[in-house]
Length: 286
Image (tube, rainbow, N blue to C red; front, side, top):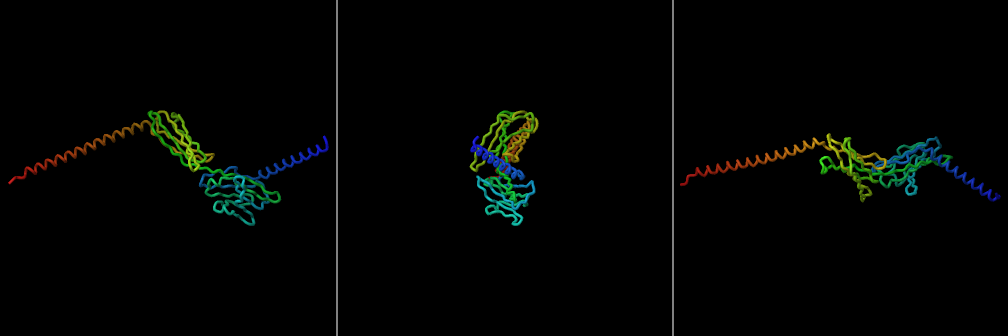
């Protein structure tokens, strides 16, 4: 190998070693920060971000930045000498929850879709430089599901529909408490709304004999956020018989009442006619 070739090899090894050391250094600086990777918050809720140094360092200042579409914007800072400061444009949105040079947290009030971004915390130390953590905010929307239950043409079938609106599109599932009943003929339809939300409707047929009152549950989920659920009770077959008996009794009672009114009206009219004839007979012509 020529001297020139040896020189290139040495330079390449040096550069490779420098990059490897740099990567290890960056990983080390990031590894000492404890924070959440993803913070979930519903529209209108508050979102809290917290970063903690796992090793004691000489921290001069803690800086929070918003990173959206590769644009970095300073949000707030905290230092021992200047205290806490929230920058213009965030004063009505961001507050400090806890201030410290080893542990610091902020909260974003009343989050909207525009707040969806990553929020980097920088612990500026001397002489090592900045230690960073980058939790990201994921914003979702989920409204309470609406359940509709109606009887099918079959006496042992009910058609159950559940709708939920959210962003991103929610997952809607149906379940039943009675083990000998089951859902079949599933159908799911998703509709995109003008406000960027989605309405998802899941419809299924509930089959089987209902010996007891049955509880049907509809659950709606978005991402890994807490789900929202609604439960409705379907009466058993005996309840259906009682309901029919009550309806029939009401019809019979209505017929009896109508007949009684007609009878009383006829009697009153008959008595009125008889009294009129008696008055005519008492009049003696002159």
